[in-house]
Image (cartoon, rainbow, N blue to C red; front, side, top):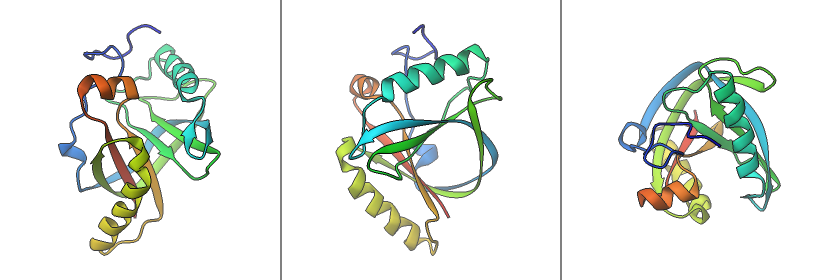
Length: 160
């Protein structure tokens, strides 16, 4: 795959956690390409192939946003829905618009801590007097880029 983003790695952009840590954001019809990743106990089995296919479709449609948000709905042990932000409709892809108010919190560390992060996120949401309606994981970089950058940030995004 050719270089998609202007980044140090030619892959994932460097992530700045400050705009995402303990924030409240409102989205109105934020446009995403929706796909599905097969998992085994939340471990993605075909993530690389799905990402390659989707990013190629997005690039071919000229729909790459300046900085893309990628959300995972980890609703099952056996698979996850993936939502990749796009700048416009992508022909031949499932599209979804997401609206609502969300609380966000940044975590750093290995993906195996995701269960711990989810519990901490629930406490954060409760501390704000709110209730989680839906929880998404925003994995900010792939494992190779996280290693290159020296940080593995994940943002939990709770619809409240």
